[in-house]
Image 1: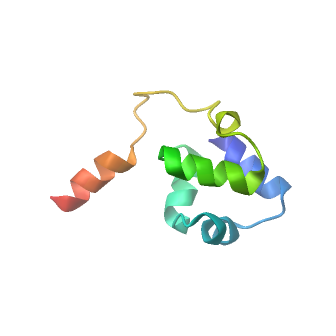
Image 2: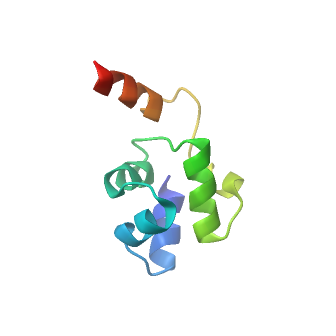
Length: 80
C-alpha cells in the first residue's frame, strides 16, 4: 500500500494524525502503509475518506492471498 504513504506525505501529515482521523492504531497504520497488513473494508473506507479518494484508488497494490497477513489471522493468533 505504498500509495497510502505517498498520499500521507503529499498531504503533509504524520501517521499519528491519520491514526487519529481514522481510528486506526498507528502501529497497524504503519503495517498497512508498508504492505505487511491488509486493511479491513471499513479501514479502507475511512482511509479513503481522509484522503478524499475512492477506496478503489487505494487497492492497486493489494491482491488476495498474497501472503500478507490479514486482521483476522492476527486476531486468531492473538487469541491463542
